[in-house]
Length: 69
Image (tube, rainbow, N blue to C red):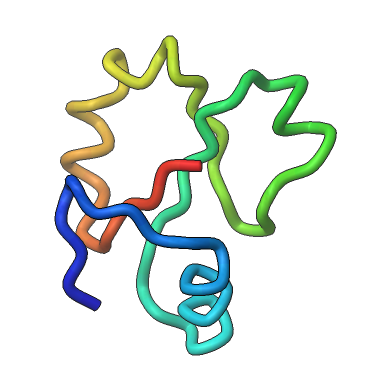
C-alpha cells in the first residue's frame, strides 16, 4: 500500500483495505455533529478546523497511513 500525501483513493479501495485488515488510521474531518450522524467504523473525529492543533500529536502516534475523510 504505497500512497503518498498527494494521492487520492476511492471508497472501494479503503473498503478493500479494511476487509484485508490493512494498517491505517481513518480521520473524519467533519464536524462532530456530522460524525455522530454517520461515520466509518473505527474512524476518529478530528474536525478540519482543529487538525493543525493536533498535527504534532498525530505525527507522534500515527505510524500507519492516514486517510482523511
